[in-house]
Length: 403
Image (cartoon, rainbow, N blue to C red):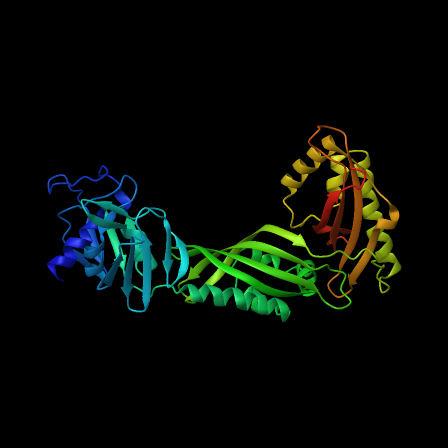
């Protein structure tokens, strides 16, 4: 290994140690007694270079020499372009926003100028370009291993596959895109979730990689959902943030979780009709449970309210209880029996969906308004044969006309 490479390796000492003051150089005596290895080969750690107070930094040219990359500096935009094999990492002085192969990524530490030299965050830059940096506290060793850098296009392809499998109703394929034992992996087991997405056709409007670092990524996706023919679902668009992890064994990105950020319904069909293929016993049991839910709301009985929900509901029971108590303190809810309709039933999977429209009249605070709410309740049979609410989705909300 060249002496120049060994010298640059020394910059990684403080990746995990963070023991050097900002913009300080340490002498050999004061250097921490650590070992550094790259791909299993130990290098001499006898000098530490400039760091920030939180993140170790390396001079750009030295960093590029260390990994065998080319650099180009755009003085007009203060942007540094680092090219390694087919990967191009572009970072700008003073900005955390960066690009990898023209796809947006976020840095935890922005590049800096010091003594007329540009410095970049070592660990993040190495990771984005395919290296793995870790700290073994037992042996006080900084471990660097080279590998294949992650192409953001792989993430775009994952999300396109995800949407395509939804449209194909391929549950096995969908589950293969999630990390094992993830919450969402288990979510696909339930037929209620299938009913939600399989009654719509999904199209991706926009994909934006928000963050990619150390085998983890966050991606923003905006999609449109159109109710299929004979479906009771309404058309809407939705913005979602997906959390991803790179599976080193499968050598692919997988979904670990996702969170809905925003949505808006494009239209709402009010002339829904009751499903005509529901056995009378099932219909009576579902309407009975929903009547108990409404009664619990009218009497503000939180215990009876929670009893209407499935023991394995996908909703957070603790949060649901807190939100319901707050709602009881704020509104009086009005029901109309004609606005509770059992709109779908699937005998094979023992699932059903109830449409409900309610009005809520304020009883506290000038900041609250009278409004209506339209909700779909997903019902599922329990192990004891009872029909309970498994999940719910609000599809429309707005002020009453007299407001």
